Image (cartoon, rainbow, N blue to C red):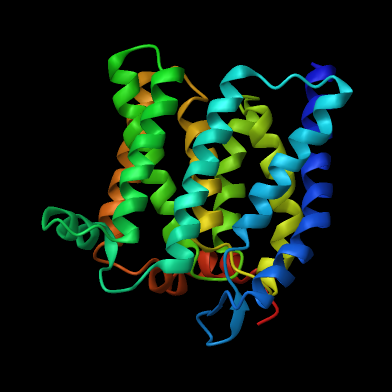
Length: 274
């Protein structure tokens, strides 16, 4: 047990340290490249800070390998799926448009033979989830549940990245369950440490995850949560919850809902400078 805890803490510290090294460099690169967007207050901030998260995760893995760390084989699938989703998110950050909004809008365009960057994200999300689900699931039903849950949770995390620190806070909140039962992967522990280092920058509105980062952490979180239990009932409850939330997002604004709830609004503003 102590060796597992030691490994978990070590991977978190490694992820934290790597992001402290990379995030300021990536932020400067984005500013120099003109990759700037306006946040909800109209403030110009660098977008696509998810690049730093992915770079930090890969750097942490690379540093650990010469010291005898052996990455579990299924973790390779997890990091592949996460990076792939981050990549299509990067395309959306750099080349996306706002002509179509929401899942329905993207699907409507696809039905008419028009591929938007949002549609590309949706397709890649399902394919990435399928690849990882085939590897990790035991039955056909498990695979179907995994595919839909991972895809929908990735989209849900993306939808929360509209206020400083919100997406990362949601990640940490949902992290309670897999961490409590010790069901998280090594990659997850690294990403957790990376996000601990990144959160202060996000809260100060010095950078934004962008679709690059939201897709990356959403994929990692989705895989971790759906594989943390073998209970079909729990998996179906998790799937039903994210499905309902995604459906509600088409009609209601999460930001307005949070603002109307005193407790959620307090958590949402916690740590911000404004």
